[in-house]
Length: 260
Image 1 (spheres, rainbow, N blue to C red):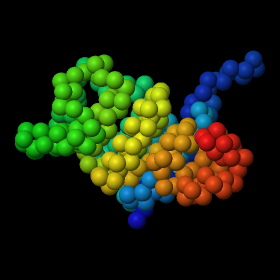
Image 2 (cartoon, rainbow, N blue to C red; image 1 turned 90 degrees about the vertical axis):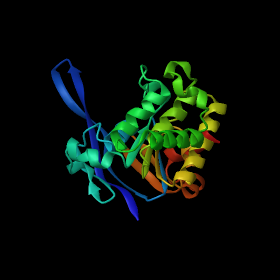
Image 3 (cartoon, rainbow, N blue to C red; image 1 turned 120 degrees about the vertical axis):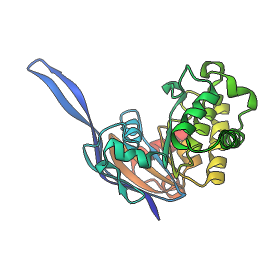
Image 4 (cartoon, helix red, strand yellow; image 1 turned 30 degrees about the vertical axis):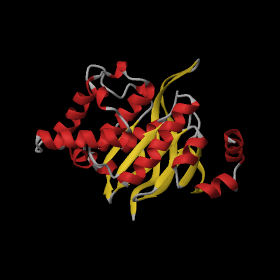
């Protein structure tokens, strides 16, 4: 069953135009006519370079960036047609995590406070005991020790902050987890640790995984299916092994050779 459908999706960004004869604002196309599907419980990796629009796509999936045209359909619901207020009813079902450099954790909140903030929004009718059980469960799932509960983000290392971000996302019991550049800025050992963790968590919690990355090795490790974007357009997509071993485009072949 299809959980996520991208139908002829186009994303644009205003850009200041400064030519000697012409000034003003023009729209730069980030993603153009992108169509993809992701099955419930499946995993899809989109790979592209710096100008591929992957960040904008990840933000658009959680309605943090506008869609120029096309549709994002999640669980049969056209997200692009929803108001922000209506989208709130869907929001708990899809969560997103970003690179550590994005500062996705609130600096003034301890780990426990960040977790309680989420529970106060989505599980406010539950008892404190139920909250404690939920927090304990996700911390165990991502491998966080009890001692980090009272620490602030600045007191954690980069891997621990990503573990906290994952645990916080899991508190809503999402059907879809969006991971954008989740291992950016980390060394090889740290990347391997987080990739293994993501694979295990996906198996345990049975959510669908949508990975956007500039690293083909990351997509290869996490995804059943892979799509390759270049300058905002989808060059090819298919089963991971098919794309990796029989790439159709020169750009994909270069990505594969660089990831070996």
